[in-house]
Image 1: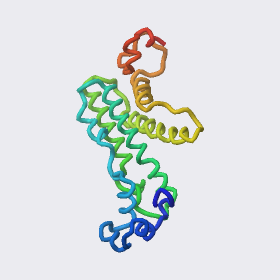
Image 2: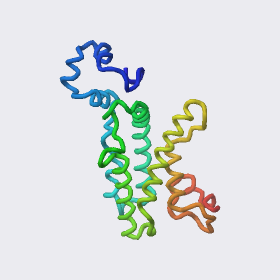
Image 3: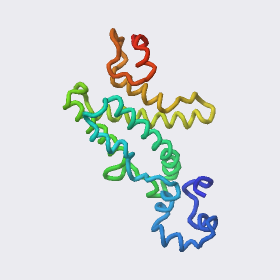
Length: 203
């Protein structure tokens, strides 16, 4: 019902479709917002587990591997959440269906904080140079959400789809090495093709 009618669909319509009384719905869900979040099947109040666990991975694997793994899983999370977020925010009169910037600690800022904490830990270990971790964390999260938004547009025939794993790998590779002309192989390249053909790393 929510997918068909949007967030403005009523609990009465949901009850009718489910073949139950409206009262029985509110015995389980206190508000329509609670019902919406449960119906859409995504915990929009939290951040992806891969990002929450990222700081604990400092010093293990490689920085590229950690950022690619967390990024790929986050893309999957955003793919599920973004349509719900857009549906909710398109009807601001319906409160509480998706966390907003008005909350004290919204999920997007918590996600960025996890990434920043991870980057800071890697700096302290000497595995990456000193950077503004808040700027890079925001750029990283922005690139992941922008990918999902672009793919939503591309699915309508208005663009070219890019494989999510390839996108995250290429982005992380570029983020860690920069785009300046290089005179040697990228030290943290993560693409299998590049690892098997080092000569292709030359720019």
